[in-house]
Length: 273
Image 1 (cartoon, helix red, strand yellow):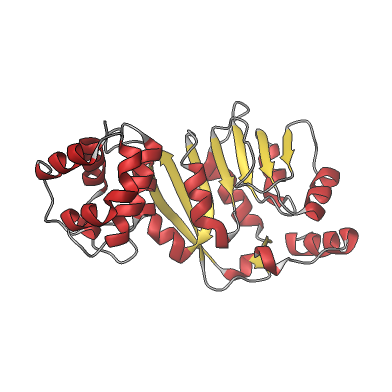
Image 2 (image 1 turned 60 degrees about the vertical axis):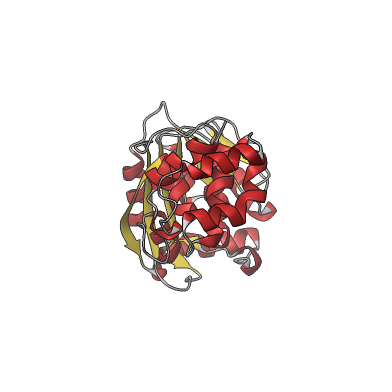
């Protein structure tokens, strides 16, 4: 039986349809399931986080390899997952992922809801894990792998690449889902590797990058001036100390959108006390 036929049977059995309000697109591509599992390089020692398991087709394949923490907001689908999946290695959390308290995990394998891609990445960046294999809309995936000077290079790019090596490994046709999403998707691999050095405080670094990037087309000196009131509380320094540190900072004349990840790390550490 194909995954599409299995999905149809489950929709009849549990009386549900894809929920447009939370952008549900159910995976129906067997080969993509296999690809995600292979890319995750799983063993019995791993605990995988899956965000939005849906009908559990990927979850089922993950459970054959390791423990799974699956977070699903849809009550009907939670009931389906409880009935259809083996429970020995499954920790099913029926909550909004963005509000849920997460147990420990060391890998992420997921097809999260596309409309929440950015906030999901921001939450994941608050946790330490070794490897992520995730499917996003291609346009969003390209932000994660972008480079300075490109229009899609943004604060999210900086924060993701600070924590991980980011790589798009393949594109995914809309026909891999029911209903079909608009446009192609992409498989992204996030491999933990702080190759640009350590920041002194990761949460404060996120505040710094997000606010400075609001002025991406201005030079760093102007961006710091305009964002100072927003970033100062998280830097643990006074305005006087901030002003002194600005004067001694290199790259002040660089446009924000042209500053590489390591430049943001250096600039933040220069200010943070």
